Length: 118
Image (cartoon, rainbow, N blue to C red):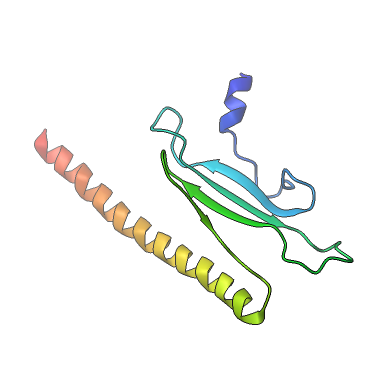
C-alpha cells in the first residue's frame, strides 16, 4: 500500500516539507497512468526569522509538461518589482481561471457529441 503515498496530497493545514518555507509543494498535473511527468512546483521561503540578510527570499514557480519547463522569475527588491511580481501571479491566475471555464464548456460539448455518436 505504500506505493499509494506518492499520489497522496498533503492537506493545506500541514506544515510545508521544508522548514522555513511558507509554501513548498510539488504536484503532478496528470492523473496516475496518463501521459508523462507534467508538474507544478511552488516554493516561497519564509524570511520571518532572518536577522542579517535583507536579500530576496527564495521564490520558485515552475510549470512543466512532458517535455518543456518554464521558470517564472519574481523579485521583491523594489516596490515596483514587488508590485509587478503580484501582478504577474494575478494575471496568471486570471488566465488559468478563464482557460478552465472555456475548457469545461468544451468538455460538455465533447460529451454531448459522444452521446450523439452512439
